[in-house]
Length: 299
Image (cartoon, rainbow, N blue to C red):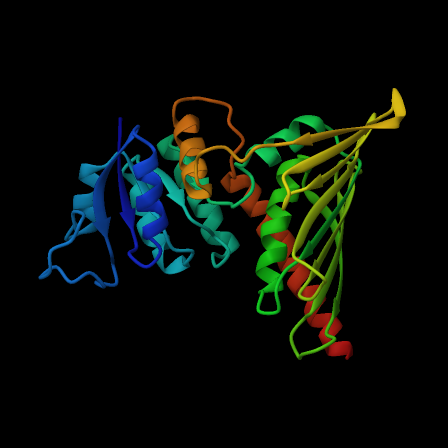
């Protein structure tokens, strides 16, 4: 059994519920550096008075908030040789991610970065089928209040985990139809292994959607991540299609990530979102931001 603690009260609720789904974890309590927890009132969980107390009581630590203000605490946890789960790193700088990578290698511990899709059975099945994708087309449609840049970053991390390569060249087009903020982002990516990809992210559409089409050496795979459905066309039978419905399983999305994290700690080869993957995504996003600024300056 692994003793696990949480840093950050704001987004702790889904992680507390997820730990309850996993008997392999023993929840030791929460430390909140912003002091949002009123210690004078009784709570359902233990409240640590200092980060050092949490580190001494736990084997692993969850950082529940995607905020680089927590970066010093993440570094301190790694220095204590604790395995770390970070909910997200979209607000981290590249140099901060590189520092975490260096500390992780020195401490020989595991750092898992949260991602809503990489640990799902759907993506694992897609990755098994698409071992060497040559061309990938990603299409996402979300609601009017969606942050398209953050959504594109999340999709880019997913794409990098699928293609197994670093980004060589990036081209971006940004369109605003109804507002001053981007309503559509089109990203073209060339990878250093010769593969190519296009990401289309839209704020407006007939219905929410998330699709990935991958062209491989011997097959074409179309995945509908919203419906958990895969359609495959193979070179040995091009006039036939194979349809697979991938069940989500009994665990919640957060519990599934924590279970993957636990399997990695035990030496398993589970697919997870690594620091290396996020660093590649961060570098590519810096290029995307620069291209977006150029496009807006033109208008």
